[in-house]
Image (tube, rainbow, N blue to C red; front, side, top):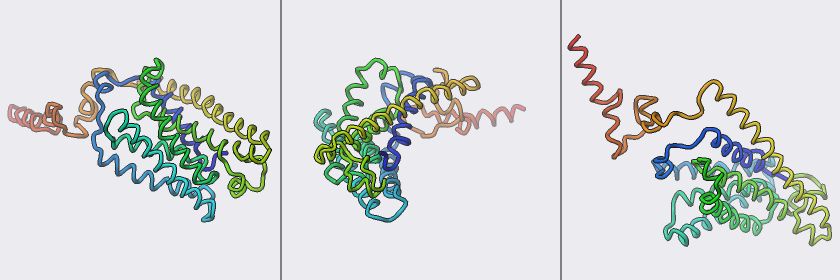
Length: 293
């Protein structure tokens, strides 16, 4: 059961992203140790657009303006808002301060988690999913990622493993747990196979619930099994023609080494714009060269 693409889009992109990060390799140590956002206001703008767009993303899955679409939209907001608040609470408990970036991460994990279940679960289940999507990916990102050797080797710059892969797996499993047969019938038709484990136990049809949960696990395993080798093959093929990672010397310089200019003129960077091909130093040198000629 995958209502709006939690498996084929979010879990798939999370697995593919972290696999590609493994083959590309890490950034230089300086950038890994200190990686502040360059514009939090733009981050919030993008997050707001993303949340708004996800309303249509999940609400549009039934391809009709019906009850199932309405339920999907409400559940999307319930899960996402809950996940955001839980992530903020954990940040405040552990780090003593709420974080805007943390709030955005919690928002994304909530959106990803509810996607496969949006029109298939009740509102209370969506809020439970929000509690889990705001806490489990937080734990894997803030705790496990810093302790597991393999994860420490992979430079997952935007934590896509946690926000998409972990949250996507969580959403798929919880869909198999909380799916209400009254709602699945709206989306899948009158098929008794589509039922969450909790409802199957209450309906004395445990075999159907365990079967569906097994299908959810099989779907997760299939996505991982097909993404890792195919993404690896694509990266290795591209590497035959162009390097996947710049040299450390170029990475130290940054944008100026490639484009001759910096994306942002930030204090503390040695006023690199003035030294770029568009800066005053370069223009003066050109003028002097022309005068000598």
